[in-house]
Amino acid sequence: MKFPLYIAKRYLFTKSKSNAINIITIIAAIGVFAGAFSLFIVLSGFSGLRDFSLSFSNEFDPDLKAIPAQGKVLNISEDQLESLQQIEGIAEFSKIVEERVILSYKSKTNPAYIKGVDENYRLVNKIDSAVVFGTWLTKSEPQVVIGNGLSRLLDVGTFNYQNLLKIMVPKPGKGQVTMTNIQDAFNARQTIVSGIYSVNEELDDKYVFTNINFAKGLLDMGDNEYSGVEFKLIPEASPEAVSTEIKYILGENSIVKTRAELNDALNKMLNSENLFVYLIFTLVLTIALFNVVGSIIVMILDKRENIKTLHSLGATPNQIKNIFFLQGMLMTGLGGLIGLIVAMILITLQMNYDLVMITPNLPYPVQMKLENVLIVIFTIFTLGLIASYIAAGRSKKALA
Image (cartoon, rainbow, N blue to C red; front, top):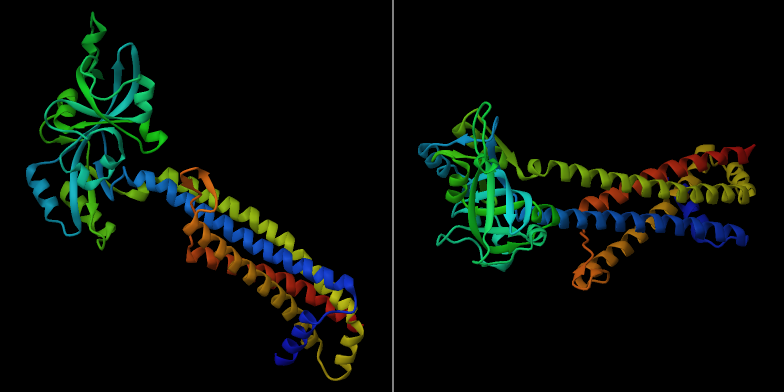
């Protein structure tokens, strides 16, 4: 292999007498460089956007969440709550109540979801850090913390005691009930808006937070009835192992979901977009590698007399084929490596110096990940291998 490699390096790095061949070789190398550079930039950009998108849900979604397997109510006794506290790996947990409600403020109404939380909720989630106006819930009076989107839709502010927010929910019941007044079909409570939070558009338009006892009173729920339990795990805990223990304590009427499972639709969408963009840029890179094929074929035609001389001196057809195969691999490898290094430098600069901004205060999110480096190297190597093999096969015709 030393003989073909030596000749391949000479052919690649030695300037040819034909300017056309030199230009074709340079264009092929630039194409590989641009393909590797753009592929890594795009993958790093999507990794940054993925982490940026999930960072919003991380403020709202817990590490684990237990919900009813059927229906809307999960019955949890005091003994079960004490058993949950004994599970190794759980840092904190919070009992919650969720239900769809109607919000009414002055002459405006809007559907939403009320989420009653206990005093441990701020230890499980970071939602209180997302409060942009007012304060988080206190026990002094019935209060709610409303999303920024809902506050704009209803035109409601904080601590307006002259105009209280009205929350209505259909009364639970079975069978057909005849009512003379539509108001009799709803439980209604008035409350003060103590704060406005902002996480993302979807959550801001959906949830209203309140104390769990206020929510239970509105929904006519019993002492041991909850919509679910949210858990925060210690860093070294295994979500699978903890989920199994939670499931054992709460019984078959419960389902335990991880954060990824709670955001299953979002994760699938992000993964699909990432795959789609990867395939597009791989296609672009494949087209760029046709230049490598063309460059090697032109080189074979130019070196036809040299090939016959090498063959006369004892070089086998396979050795001659390996010369041009290795030339293609060297061209692909060097071009791809330089493109990858330049792209990594640019991503590092973006991470540290915010070269590209989405808004005046928000830099474009990027992430430097080893898996993206390996994906680019594997893609370049595989496509370069195929292109070089196809082009090197033409060397045998030069011996005819």
